[in-house]
Every structure is written in C-alpha cells, then in structure tokens.
Amino acid sequence: MTTGAAANYPWSINNSPIIIKTKGKRVPSWGLYNDMTGQLPYSIGYGLDAQKEEDIILVPYGCTRLRVSQFPVVQQ
Image 1 (cartoon, rainbow, N blue to C red):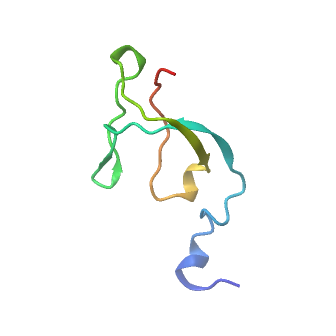
Image 2 (cartoon, rainbow, N blue to C red):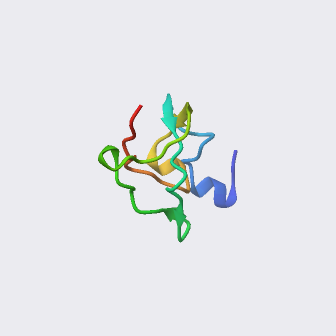
C-alpha cells in the first residue's frame, strides 16, 4: 500500500490505465518553454523540419508532468 504524496497522485506512468503505441517524428525546433510545451509549430505548409520516424508511447493526459494535447503535422 502506498502512503504519503504518492498515494494522493494515483495517475502516473506506472499506473496508466491505457497506452497507445504509434509512430512519430521529433521536431527539433519544438522545445520546452517555461517547463511546458512551447507554442505549436506551423505544420505541413511551412516545411516543418522533422527527424526520422520512431516508435512512441502515448499515455492519458493526467499521467505525466509534461502534457501535450496537440501535435504538429509533418510531411512523410
């Protein structure tokens, strides 16, 4: 049984009720801003630079400290 601060925060990576495994690309120009995701970069029409496709795992919004609710679209 967990006690203390962890007991008050049941939503964590280890306790995630669901995960989604998919593909994604890193966008080097998109980074942190004040410990949060920065402004969403312009997408396809602006030739957004992206790295090689890789496997990513998505978990529910409340299970993380860095929360992304929208991703930019890049060309394949």
